[in-house]
Length: 412
Image (cartoon, rainbow, N blue to C red; front, side, top):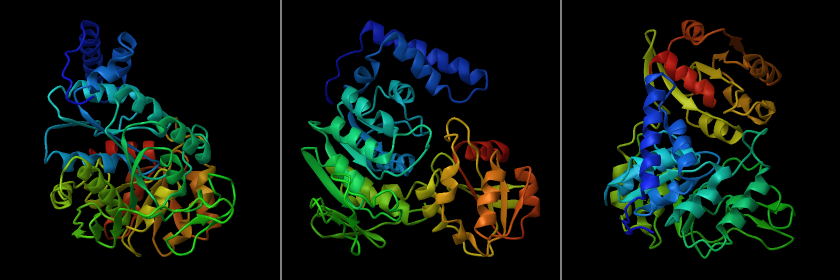
């Protein structure tokens, strides 16, 4: 637990050193940050290393389908008001990447860790977190991830008996099902725009009733809990009913929801909402997301959207027509190779925008846009799309590896 500064064992020290060396070799070879390979080497040498590295930290784990990386960054900024923080800020969120991040945080007080949904229960077992933030669950990476109800059940079983405070979104029935086996839950009304994965009751399979912002199962009585923190427009209401303004440089309602959850997490550690929210204003971009970059004499805003829920949120924050939009979709391992999810995205919302389509799966996307009745151009490269785009800031929306491709091309 935090406060236990027991030194690392000789084996753990060796594992950390070997991991850092492997990461350095990977960086020198131009293969990225090296955090994943470094963590894999370290864990091979000491399978218990993750727990050893976390023993002196107050740990926060953040998991969700969408918003993990941004919320992790906002929580880290808020907690820095109270002490040094170590975090996997670049989003390497499986055990190897988390191990690498913690290996660099020997002087930290807090560990703020984004965790891939499949690994949450295992990482929580290893690092004994003080807080776990659960934001949302929806379909993603269809060839890799379990069906959302199964994932919620896995979380529910894995978190049962955990001593962590669970900070959870009460507007997502799957999150409520996951969290409600826990002893201590702080409910946040953070909203849920995408509802297509939550029409059946996770408890009994019955049909969910959704009057207004409320929800309940008419068959078994499973229902939305009463929140203690509430996102209300541009403010977050704390448990005492005080309204605190949310001022962010990050766009969109989804990021206000991320900030509301982050304020609730910070409060568990005694950081007041006003202080937490002021610190969150410092965040301008998160691992390239929301950055506005200059490329070939044009301004491009870089937006990441990996699944139907993420695309829906992203459509709500882009500039209206006639702002040009470039869409890029890949289907590599990190994206999930099944692109059938494209049919669940509400692309007709882009009506009126000049649209340009790139990426490995540009033809899959073109068929989807054709059926939606939209005007678009298929381009071979980002450069071609930018050259053809009419005047104005270009909104560029890409899924995971397509986003990394774009960042490399624009030198971001």
